[in-house]
Image (cartoon, rainbow over all chains, first blue to last red):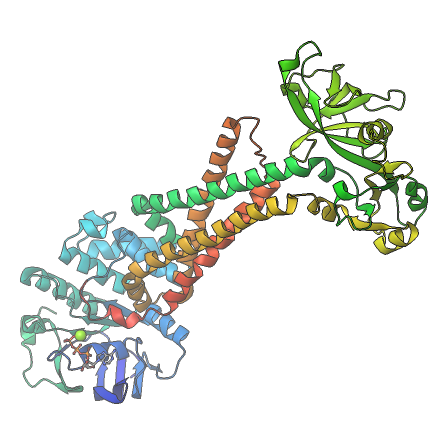
Length: 236
Length: 374
Ligand SMILES: Nc1ncnc2c1ncn2[C@@H]1O[C@H](COP(=O)(O)OP(=O)(O)OP(=O)(O)O)[C@@H](O)[C@H]1O
Ligand SMILES: [Mg+2]
């Protein structure tokens, strides 16, 4: 397949002195555009490592990672940051917004990193924010936003460069149930309408209803969860 | 610049505090350099002002004009040598002038430096008031305008303490000081009469002077030494350095400035470094979403740039403000060229000290951004 995320036989080892941790053990997965995948599993099982390898933050020790059909297994650090900027949208545990930029600027900075912010970019940013229900908050600073609003800004930021792959690491960890549902349903909506390949790591079983497939991570091994989520509940 | 400026705007208090410290450092640097410049001018302005290149001194005088005594007859020989455009004798003697007139013994005294030169030679400074020296007027003298503050006017008689000789002020010059006191330029013959009043004090030298001053940039000092027996030829700069106490005085001020600059480099470096450390989580996030080291490095450096230029400009303004309040007696002279040089040095120091921060950015791991609650 040419689009989305494709991982084949990927392992990752952390070397600390003489001891070696196998954080990922021959993981294979493919996520196509428009698919929203969940990864669950106990603490320390390797979920964040998985996202880091998928998101070009870490080079896999073994195996092949393909983004949009191009292998990223042996590219330079500079090229990796270019890939992160253009091909991947991250949504992190806490929104991790830049404290001194207002909501609009949080999105403009993405374009600024790539070069310039054009008029079209600004219009696109405004459109994204409106879509995510932040119409009133364009000029607000992070300390004036609620947790859910911050996370929605983070979603908009992840979509700003129109990447093919969206990765979310426990995006609801700092939210209450109501806001968690809001945020995840928004991610699901954007992923499907914009045809992104999306992976979400979560601890929250209630969020699985929004996902197409659920994988379980245990001791670095990724397996498709037998219990299929009730997809019928999700309005697609 | 995008990040740098917005951060400053959102954190005015934090950045104002750093700016205040930077401004104080800049201020101190400029004040010290002004004082140093003032002291050096006071010590040697009359020699620094000379449009000359070399000084012929007596051998063994250790490049010190005041220790040297030689005959002015050498002028005829050196002026014919290659590359010598001009040659003129000079003599310096410290003296004391009595204030007021003879009927008022309590009027006080003023220290002066008497500099004997040939009337009309290239060593004679231009007058700002009155007329220059003339060979018709053997007792005419042109004096630094600071003598006006001591109550002297054009046409006044200068009575020398411990001597029967008197001089008449025919003109005023500016910025002419020597050995920290006002310079009094007088015809060299008159200077000889005053200086060698005691029998034998001229050591039997014909037409004695302290030094011969030469003009000409490509003069060969060894050739001059060979042509004039018992002489030692040095550059004008070396002769100024050879003045008693000059090297020590400028040395201690240079040391103070150097220490100040080194300490401020360290202080600013630590400030910028701590700032960057505080932001390492945020930089990690930006790296995770694709920011390159160059982008973040530029943000830090441009922020240091904005802060430095602002602080240096305020420091300069404060310095000029202080200069206008200082009393005339204070040896404080701001030289625009020096102010510009120290501004550039401060800017370079600030930028260099931010390099540690830039280096720490390259070591921030974008991985830290994942799986972390703030
Ligand atoms: N930088 C590292 N150096 C060494 N070992 C690491 C490093 N990061 C993670 N590990 C180890 O790799 C394993 C997988 O860690 P990872 O962070 O991927 O787990 P996780 O599933 O995300 O856990 P959690 O749910 O607690 O976030 C763990 O045993 C962890 O100790
Ligand atoms: Mg994790």
